[in-house]
Length: 442
Ligand SMILES: NC(=O)c1ccc[n+]([C@@H]2O[C@H](COP(=O)([O-])OP(=O)(O)OC[C@H]3O[C@@H](n4cnc5c(N)ncnc54)[C@H](O)[C@@H]3O)[C@@H](O)[C@H]2O)c1
Image (cartoon, rainbow, N blue to C red; front, side, top):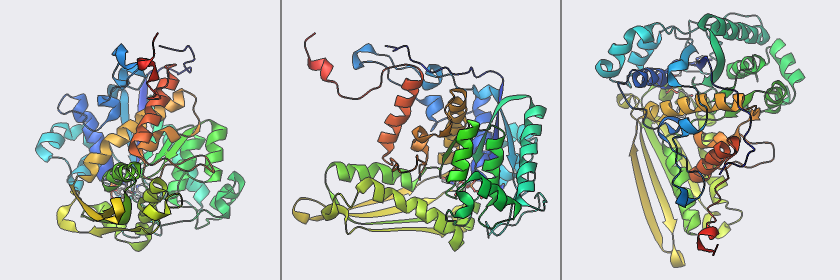
């Protein structure tokens, strides 16, 4: 039953512009996918906003509307797309290059639509993505000038497309590892560092800065340091803009955040967890560079530490050996194969093993996440929820949290958090799973 405290949410009227930073495999699979779905040519499997339902009230009430009918999300028909990329290919050429979607079934029928999406010149610097070269790149004397040029792009896109609202999603390559430093503490220091072309200011940070300054929510799909430091978090709060990240949780890590809670729930020990991948897309090529890999490695390694809590359970997880490898192997293209070997132990210490061989498709798993993030960030913005959107942890390998809070990595805790946030927004009772009321006399 509604508890009368629903938040005020501005209606999803007019067009929603989704600006993708990067027009590679993930972004084109997302864009082409949405267009195929809009034309009735395919189903949006993998998307919670499009397929998911939400239980409301007691189990005896049989209320389980579709999420998109429960909360006021933008309709797919109202989405328009924009992108930046240092590679000048339009969305059709980029999708062909990525080789994810079937050319005849999902690209040719919408070729004109895709060809009309041409990437704007990017803010790109090879020092941050070593394995890429870009020609479609903005020139500017300072990083501040480049950020201002991005702000102009955002305003021009909005006006030209007649958008009511925008969201921006980083779907671009993984940048090199950067630790937060003095330039990231305050907005003043950050802006001075932009003027001074400080090397700790990466291109992704300029996109985040530009988006927030323009009041556009920003989600980071890659593991780079982008909107997860005090200067940007403070700016987002001050400007009333929703932000979050980072690193789409798609294949191996999604599986990890389901299996690890199972071991912990049953007090089974883990002696070692070896994860290795082969993939042959451009992302794999970029991650072949040790500095970009380090950024990804940090993101992938963190989850077990948080879920298994070795300090709390030293006998079960204190000695765990955790290794993650990504190997670039061109023949596989986007069809990644991820193997996990997990050495566990149970009653009296007897060892057991679990092997997972996930033959997945990277961008097929990531595309629906981009859609959900775009729609939920737009919802958050319209609901006046500014700053870090921890309730969207469900989508990220390294969820961004308030300072001092550890992230929740367990996929089903994240799902509960997400759905309870939707209930909260709409003034519905939280579901605690206590259930005692079913066994008490009236
Ligand atoms: N697919 C997945 O399952 C998955 C999961 C988690 C994270 N990611 C991350 O998502 C990102 C995209 O993956 P992908 O497979 O589409 O990679 P991709 O290499 O196919 O596409 C990335 C695109 O970003 C462009 N780019 C690089 N720097 C840019 C910049 N400064 N501005 C604008 N564009 C820029 C590149 O030219 C390229 O076209 C990667 O960082 C990847 O690590 C993907």
